Each structure stands twice: as C-alpha cells, then as structure tokens.
Amino acid sequence: MINSEDFAKRLEKVIEFYSETASSFAEKIGVQRSSISHILSGRNKPSLDFVLKVLSEFPEVELYWLLNGKGSFPSAPSSEERTVEIKKNDNLSADKTPISFPVSDEKSIERIVIFYKDGTFRNFEHS
Image (cartoon, rainbow, N blue to C red; front, top):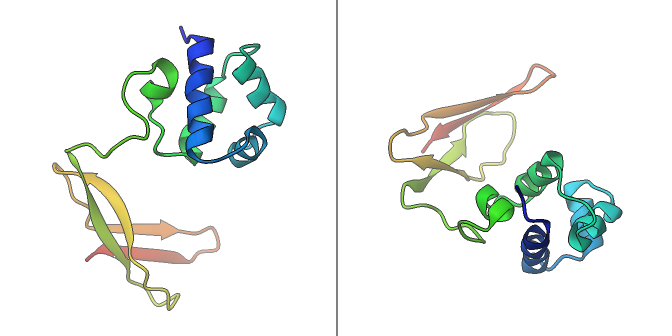
C-alpha cells in the first residue's frame, strides 16, 4: 500500500528537482493541474496511469523510489549498464547525429530499425 503523504513528498522532490511548477509538471505529464494538487494534498492517491506518465516523462525517476522510497533519485546508471552509440545509417536525412541507448553487459545492440506508418524507415547501426 502506498503511503500518500510520503508519495506526495517524493513527488514534490521530483517537481523541485526539475524546477517545475505544479502546473508545468501537470502539463508535461499530460494531467489536469487539479490531479497534482489533489495528490500533493493527500486528497487522492496516484493512479497507475499517473505513475506511468511520470516515469515516461522523467526517466531519472525510479518506480520503486517513487512508490515506496526505496532506491535513489535521481537514478544513477547501474554498474551493469553502459551506453552504446548508434549512428543513423540511411539516406533519408542528412542528420548524422549519434544517439545513445543503455544496454547491459550481457547483450549488445547490433541494429535498430524504426518503421513508420507511411512505409518509410530509419536504420540505426552500432558504430
């Protein structure tokens, strides 16, 4: 069971860490301002959808830390994680900006292909 008062304190910490107001935070995660207000005041408990929106928009927030205070915030990469640089390898764009993906030591990424609904695709290969 989530302790609403402790959850509210952790949520406040997240909002302050990102230098957001409750209104701007609500806008970023796609909820009504009143939802933030009700959770911070203890009136309402956070829904699963609310928690998932926070985690999606702010990846440094760890699920277990947000729900029950275990873990750390902001999250630090685990010793098992490293970053692999992937470069775009297609002729659809002149943009050759490298992007990074976290991977474990057990597996490495060779290639990522993103297919778009219009039939085009982007190919990213390990550099």
